Length: 261
Image: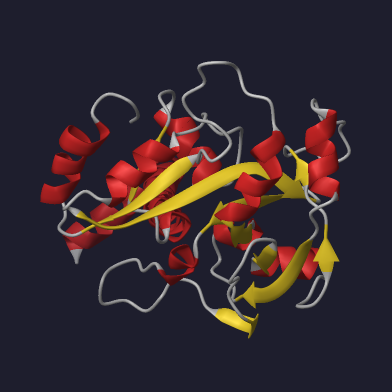
């Protein structure tokens, strides 16, 4: 008991110093736990955002911008990829599916993504269920049919059977640079045919339509002579490889060459 009494008197004599030390240790532990939880939350958020996106092919430029615009639906797209590249990638023996993605139009600040029904059937892994699920209506089957992300459906109040008109770009209300293109958007209304279940990812902010809708609207757009893309170009290509990662490297080396990244 003598030793314990001496120790206790020493602690009592320096109570402020020892208290501050204990407090500092507590703050350090709390910070470590908070950092771990935040890191786990960020990683989970990234995983949800990535969702069905595996290998993306886009025009030469900033790869981060490609991910931001295509996966997170933020910022301007990098550029366009020629239809010939899409066709070549789709025929590559290492590719199970090559899904085109076209961006550039919007409705009330919600991006319109031109694609194929295969995009709504993508999975995070082969054995997983489809990432997207229709809660009302059906998947688009022809041009100018639209499927709404859950957040878009809630915010706009649109439902199957309703119609809307797209606007060029991501800033509704701004005048189109090309008057003919503006007329094309006005004369091609979309009809809502389905809504998607919530994914808790940026995908909820998208409007999904047949990519032929984009090609038809922009068919009359004027292109610079020698432009390799043309009106049937795509913004990006989502690739589902047969084997990962072996086929990914082969696709990059053989199919894409040096045209895109």
